Image (cartoon, rainbow, N blue to C red; front, side, top):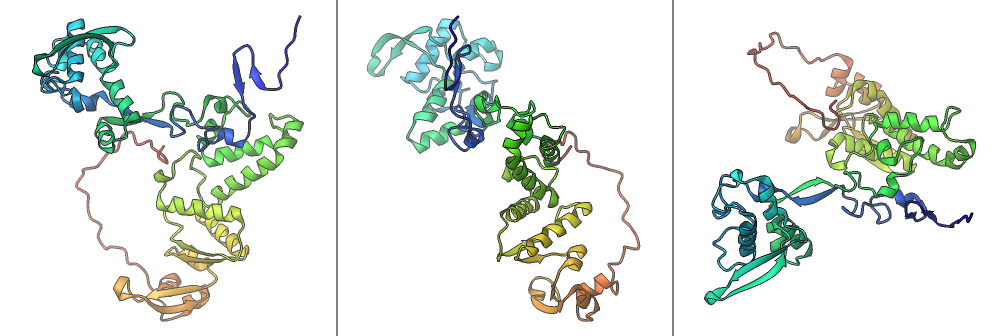
Length: 391
């Protein structure tokens, strides 16, 4: 019996080969890891039939297809429309009937073409010139998508975009990675599955990989020890700034202003820079009170590294924790801008000129309304809210 060995990462049974697995294999920002179909975007612009035929009660002859040269018989002598007429003749499609009354499989012959089947086209040109030729018909949608890819005209590209919708990539199902990257697993989980977990769950899983209960062998643990420490630290920073509920695959555009600011804060802590001035605008906004203390500890750690942390805040816990408080006023906007008081939190509380100190010390209070407004009995019900942080 002959045995064959290879120095390459290849499977002779399935005919699959891989380059050496390295960090960039798992990055959709590089050609080595990105899905080859969507180039790592996770979605593709595709022609939407509902945008192409917005009014199915119109017939093809009435211009049901509103895209470019496919817009009905007024394209007299038009190459594209005479192709449609030839398809209609071949498959007995009534071009004067409402599109909604035509069988879907017949409509698909016009929209998606006939594959490799040949079609005889009777072409009527100008000056009553007629000719007949045999060709294949790619279909309206494949034609527009091909022209979108190949055209150098910004005008044509913009016109075709009007009929396109952003949809999950059919190859990677929105994961943005090539199949080879998704085939690599740790503890039966690939990288996409881990990034879909909340940060707190991902941190628990990473911590388990470094314990006696780990599914990894002692040799594997020795190999990944430094990597686990780095991941643990970075996830820990996100937990410390109150972002343990986020998933790692969340796009930055879906984050609130406060979340984005706290992520930048966690990044700076991880970089361990010194001698930097950080200016934060109300980092406690949107933060649950139970997470506020962790945020304050993070700010103090940033200060303890040798940095200056300047925070614009109205939260009383943050003000009481500060090393130095500058009270601006006396009013807001054009009515303020003056330094009313400054000092340690204790000095601010005792300063009779400080408006902030008056409220923190209890000398002034926000009065509760004597009467509460009664509702009208109506209510707004929100159904199916499940995106991002909503569960």
